[in-house]
Image 1: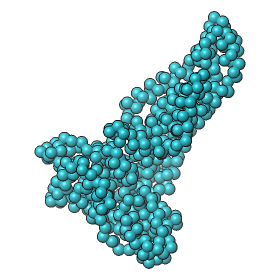
Image 2: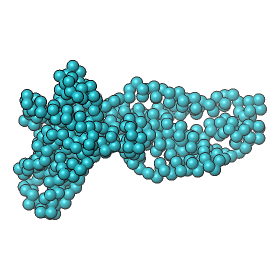
Image 3: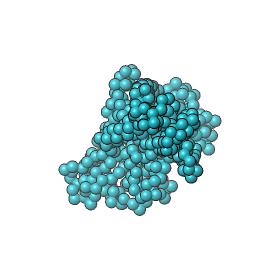
Length: 507
């Protein structure tokens, strides 16, 4: 390496190269945050404009309602990605009549209840049955649907015709559902084993694959799934079940409960309620998605999957920039001369490398609101989850890269009169960045895939959108194949782009 005493260490071109990664990093971060500000999506909302409920006590109010859009025909997404179903139509019609706005957040059933408990939302509508146990925690509106349960088996199954044929076999149910409650009530009598999952589509796949012999589920959901050609057939009569209602936290949102009850009575009286029910249940096949080939499915699913891909790319890139800042900062603390800063960095790395990413997703989205008394935006929760987790790994990447630079480089720079900071900036870090780049690109790829875990809190990334699609059409294998292809193409292109940037920075 040529030395130039006038410039301190290295020539001016070398000095420019040392600063380039930082300048490009900051420009990249600014661009990403600008993109986020322009495209940051909000929750789906229904607005009560020019509605007949202007005299209602809740007129003009906005209520946040969580649901589980994997429970067709009560709530699911159509081919355009819109949330539809009995619950969705009822809620929107009642909101219109009572003059309030509703922001609907699509979460899993268990996540929806956690969001309600943490006051992230005001209510939950998700085909939720009223039980004595739930009454201890939640208040309910008037019932809007009386449920019932049935048992179904694979179409090819000729061995199971009744509950008596289940002894010693496995039956799958959806956790928290009326079907699960009924299955538990008869489990000892008929001697079968229970397997609980969180989605109807997953239940049906377990039966078709032979991992369970039968499914016990709410009868409207089974009827809709069978109309969608989910590969099952019912083998028992409907058993009357509990009542579906909207849940709120106990002692809270009484005005919402009163408004929902008034609206429900109104639509029952003028026949709108029955029209909504008949639209989805009188002829389930009328609402069934087309069962064409893979290309037809891809065409139908394309808009929703592209929305999911956009959200995946945006949150990954934003989180990566934040993680880079954290990783470089804590990495330099690890290689610095201060033992206190070194220990602070070690604690950070230990915490976030030693705990599952999903735990932090739930903590930031459901736990933090209970601590601060205010909801947390799902994008903020997602960025914090990914960035803090990846920042811990990048910290160690930077520490290792700096340690790989020949110590003689730093000593030579110091001997020529440069201070420690300038020596690190102009000599050590440019070489460390080159060494670390392949590992940083690999970490970016890992973050793309890790973003799929955010579906657990209802973030609309790519896998979440795929889940919404197969929850409505029950074409699980084909939908997941499409999702996998999109991930492969996106990661390949992102890796290529990262390598191009690497070559420009480190040439």
